[in-house]
Image 1: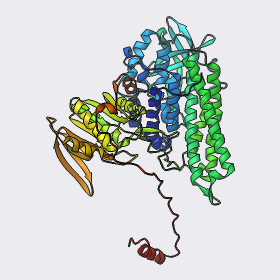
Image 2: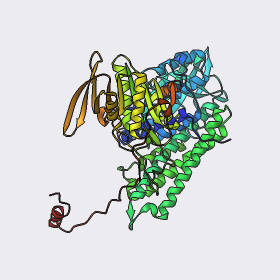
Image 3: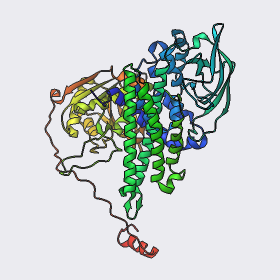
Image 4: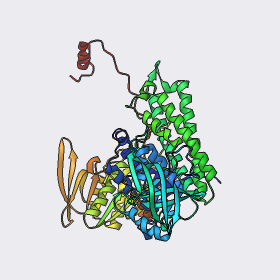
Length: 360
Length: 251
């Protein structure tokens, strides 16, 4: 009944992304964090891997590849292992293409998807989170009101990745008692992008506050159908990214502990450190299994809300614990920017708050 | 134009290799396997020739066990057109690989056979050279640059030799083996991986090629390199200089 064997294709995809993450992403992660910029060349190279285009059907210019949540979980973990800011940047177009693929009308798919199948990286984004207390996906403060065959969107959004350069944003807002999603062209009147946010982690990723001032969109921009699978998919993506970040921190701390000597032996041989490392490995693997289960269930077309929520919540706690322990294993060195662990701790802290910030 | 590229399955160069206690081989449990990095460079070069010289068919060949198809798939995902797997269990010694390739060259009639200069597992560095000898073709080994003539009748291969570079020109068909600096291999793309599944991967048992399979080399024992001895601490510069002179004999 249970098999953890990836298919041959999944294995190849994972190997490819893993090698890209280790060789192209990781070496520039510190620079991206310090400078707040991700080099276009790396973004373009990631684009050429076809992470976005491959899932888009051939009739819209893509390759009609599989849209398995399990494959996405594998991809997200490897990208997160490379660097979270860069992972979220290169995956950002998925925030548009995935919901449009799943829930867009034929008309909307025809209009939007070909934009994301070209030779060059095209940024896309989603406006999900809000700067209000008690943020809840099912009780958003931003509103959508229907009038004369169009919708008016109003409210404030925050943590909108690539907000200032994105071509489209999927805006989530309250409509009546529920949540609805709209594909908004970012040059629409009333879609106003504020200053780039200054945040604790994810410093390479440009995120923005966005004001919706009676932003009017045609009725056809509304995504039609149940948003639950989209939210679950996002939870799985976030959980997998968190597993990747935690694995990066764990491996770094493990290698450091094997190398660093105190009292004549590597500190990894001291129980205080060895137990901590074992605990970290257990936490990471448990979270991965929770996440894979959620992804597997989603792939079967079942409601994976429970599993996806468990995975995402556990991942948020896990990544904080693991990255914090990694800093601890390195002792005084862990607090210095010469080592990556402080960056992973800052990035990992965000998962407790992120909702809908990634899709894959 | 047709380019045949040899591909070898080898342990991940980043993996820690352990020798089995009885010295009969290495510990393969949980060992990850990849395309030999030099073969990957050879594949990339073949693809570039294809892209820059108005098309070519790139055919991959591997000799080994069934699992070698994983590495062939990787090459197909990078963009090669089809693959041939010559099936044989256990280690296949270089001269037999060269004979198998020579046989396939007879069948496929390629214009170029590209190989890695050596595999990173046994570091033999002989298959390309032996193949050239068997076929009576010119060879450009340790290539750091490959230039084809306009009419694709000859190639100039820049070789990395001790203390410099050497350009050799040879008529095609020819053997070219890739060195590290020849190019930087591309990543397989997701669409490439999807397409790879539909590409032809033909399997031929080694026995069917009708070549001489007599074993000429027997591996007696593998042993790990000796552990590095700890360094020595000296009190004075004079002592250091003396030791460099008398013990290390470097000055």
